[in-house]
Image 1 (cartoon, rainbow, N blue to C red):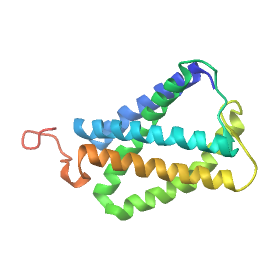
Image 2 (image 1 turned 135 degrees about the horizontal axis):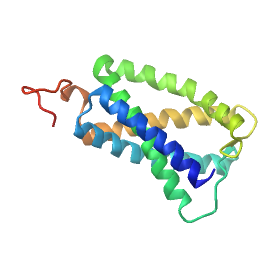
Image 3 (image 1 turned 180 degrees about the horizontal axis):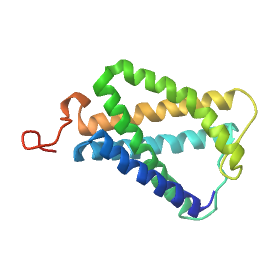
Length: 173
């Protein structure tokens, strides 16, 4: 994976983030919380990647430069932010059950998505054979959702405390 590729997919996710902010009607406080959640979950994901590489479950080949890891972390943090704005809306609408269903869906969809990317772009990710890498990938996805949502909630408060409409009687905070 090259720095250009990281910048490219980060820009794509930045566009997605702007769309998610608009459609979820997230307040500035909620967007800041999603940023904090993305930063924390990005650290968690970097740890999961390092652990999985050490255990031989998968590897992410990278350019051996001083700026690759910080660039990868920043890109990862930005790509995770839309997830927490979506989980905020799900938790607001469906409570903890909606959040639990979302975690299950992420754990089921995440590994095939990564395997598809690994097949399409072998320079981005290489999986070891067996069931352990699949289960580790699913656990990493679930952990990313839990950590990021928890940090967002810590920074921005519970989802039920936010107003959803903007106007003279409900200003954005």
